[in-house]
Length: 629
Image (cartoon, rainbow, N blue to C red; front, side, top):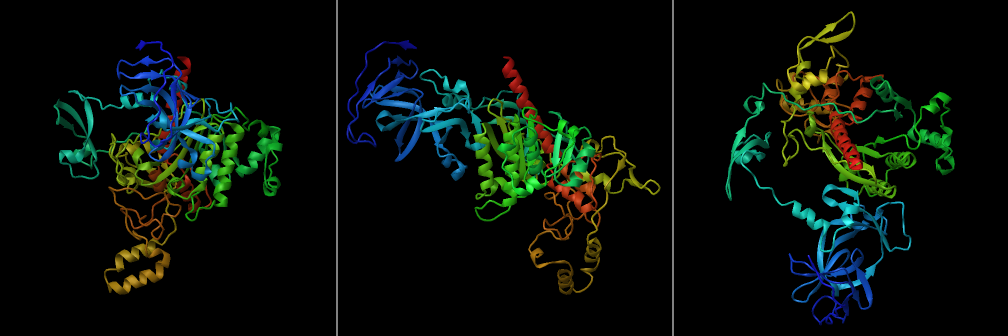
């Protein structure tokens, strides 16, 4: 660039009608200009507006299209027509994000968009506390900013120092936009192509893999690659289940006694405590000498555990925990009110984060945590994590996109400390039958037949030992992964439901008067609230998916179709476990079958947990690489 030293230049007074502000305003450049040979504009580092200085990297309140906008100035320039302009990144108030009224009224967020504006439209300068370190504060500032808000990704990321160190004339947002220019296809490359463009009418196949043969201005000639299932759905059962180890689970707190026993049996090296989490938190704070910071009710005090010295030595303290994982119960519908039970669980989990300060935090719940527009728990959870100095993002993940034959969807909130890298969400690996996967996926959907087809007529019952043994080999990749080295099958028993009535319905309903039998079925088996539920007494489809996991998978359950596709009975515990992605070696404890079904329905699918763990591992490795460079 050509640099010229010039004296301060006075700019003509604004002319009436030249912009939103028709009052006269004196604009004076107070920095030496730099000539940009690319645009031909004169660039400046600061200006005086009616005696008030405004410099690059400062914030201005600008009137744009009748609205007031906060802008972080990146650079100023003078066009060839003598227009006095500035370029900057937009700042958004917290109340204008999805946080709504839960946001801190003084907090603003950088956005990934920028604007050009006339200097005459600047109303005033605003003092902003730009916090690269969330704990270094300037109380005199009118607003503070510590994160970038990515609306499309549902994320708040820490501000990168390099984003604020751009040279005059450069904008970090503009550079990112330039990097998004579509890549040119080359012959010999491989792409995903929507199946409909190749005349494929099967809605179960949304994308196909193709090789680029020729490219011109408007058309691309490709050669399609067929997967085995494209030729014969009966002979291919490809899956992508790979174990990912991120770390070790050292401690687990679970209030349900049977769920705690199940966890201990499957994680023998983990210290498992069957205790109310709020009570355990109070004990932790008391042992660490921080009880004076603990605000607890009389019930928590009365339920306080008396731990032995050996137990106390095994408990975690500040700085020892890198990851906390928790879950919330099903979110209730209704008005914009906080359900006491849900919020108590959320505040307890957030208190663990506040006390132990892990590097990462993962919260799981049903999809309504995110989708309900009136859910204050979601907003307050985000606000709390941001105040604690965490970067946060939310999203909804469908289990079927990661290798299980299920339509269940759960919402997640993942948080990373400000000096960590926030993990991305895992990309879909399987085409889903339930949602429109526009971005494509490398593997086909896993079906019910893929998952439980080997449990229909492949078992021997040993009356002496009381076990079921496999007598054939798995017929799909999913089954081979789920079985592992397991020779004995446990929990292959169904609920003591009204499956006898289900047989009666199938055998007798159409042999006599249809209307009479329908009325009889309704009187005997239906309640009024069940009449509008679709799929009652229906059978599952071998080539379809299971509904969302249910604690009561029975013919008259609220989730509709839960009958075995080949037998006139409900699904067994093991079949439901496979629908979630649990291996056959996983042990469920419980006094009855209902408790085991409850544990399965309340859990996050292991394959989803595996996908999340892989992304977490990538973030940890990226941080290590960043620190070593």
